[in-house]
Length: 203
Image (tube, rainbow, N blue to C red; front, side):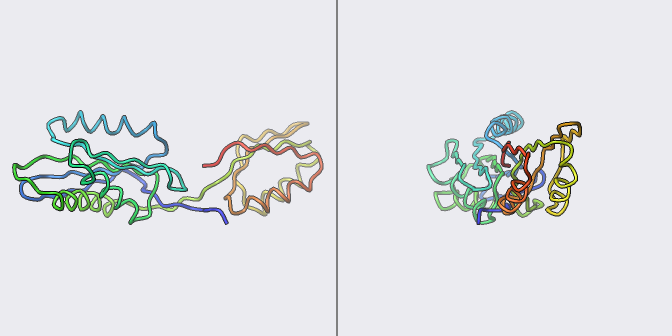
């Protein structure tokens, strides 16, 4: 069976970690696409322009295959990777975590940096409200008006979401449903002669 749900955060959450004078401010954002990443990072760079580093990691998509890490000048593998590790540990997606570092004058070493970025990211996640969302398919269905009763009976039975409803001589409805229910619902609709079904998107 296909993945039916995923976990993400509801709203922006923040965290902090301190070690040997260095301060690590963490910001966790809910995001849904790559285009929303850069403006959020740029906003933090502008606000915390006097910070030494702005490191980040993100994960996007219910299949958790679209991700990226950035150490922003820290030694390779000491910042973005531990941030991503916390995202993975929590099983989250559609999330961006940025950790802003103010250098305190004392070098932390490789293990110290990894621990600092890990703890800062974890603190932002621990402060967040986690929510579970269902992956849905969206379809446009078209059919003659005389089929309305039969169509609506199926959609009600399956608790499908309805929008953009047009009832005329020829009717059309945008419907959505969890992907785990896809095969059953489409099979029911396909038994109605005169039904036209078009896939729109999955999200």
